[in-house]
Length: 393
Image (tube, rainbow, N blue to C red; front, side):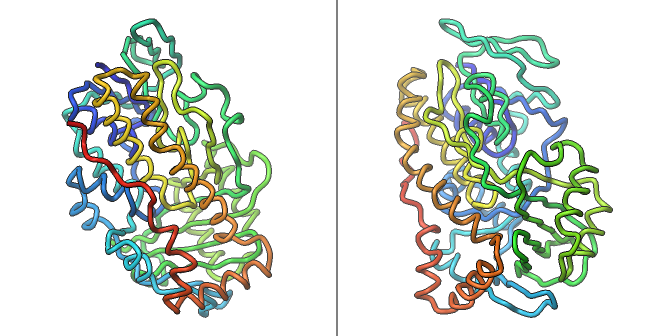
């Protein structure tokens, strides 16, 4: 079976790896001209870690990643206001936890299929027309082609989802925040292996020191309405300046650092909630199907689980896509829905909207020095209720 996968981020290449391993012929199409790099720091653990282990990726991810030692909340003068030891992450996951740039995870996954799977960069699907035994994909640049199946792994703003299921507004649950991330060289001060964050009502600024004298800076802020156009970097920067104009701590120098870069990632903090992830010969996975929000910290790992399961069910069903699609969704739907509920709660704790909310968050994080409190606050969110089944035989 020939299967078109839209999106060469993390979900798409993971699916291509497992499809190829099970005898299918995947083709990737990616709108970006080259593999995307950079992005924000993600925390990688849980069942997705098991998928990466079966792909032989763990040594490379640990080499590229960071073992964070502390999450530190500071006040306007940089004094500790809250926070906790990051040992809880390692303890709750049995050491199967690493933080790394999203782009590093994507490139590590893509390396497993590079040169083995056809990949079309700088193009995208513009139309899909299902037939009885195939589906015709029309592209912006390449000539139309027929495939047995099409999979949308093209993120929160999925084109495949829009073409197949309708406009994004039908499925997007906006959580009222936007996030912006970028890297800067030579930023000072540096706190190695410490995630340092400062908050005021409705805004959050954070930094994390990376290798090669790089620092990742993250802004999170409440925002109503559509905001700046997604591809207008100047308008995005203006929006962030307006929101952080009076913010204290290191915010003025962070804004200056942002002004010196064009590599700025900005997006809404949203979830995708759908009743069905499949229709006819089209399936969705990852953020396209069930984005938990970019503040959830586990979207990439969950996308890898979905990719593994979709490929497994197609192999088990001998290519009977109707049977495979039904099994795929049945296996994962409740598990993913539970993760989305937890992620929605977490967004409010990440950037509280009031002074009272900030004070409560700081107090709770200070109390997390006590293992019992730490386990109560975070332990359950770090343990997945889904066990990865064996590979299809």
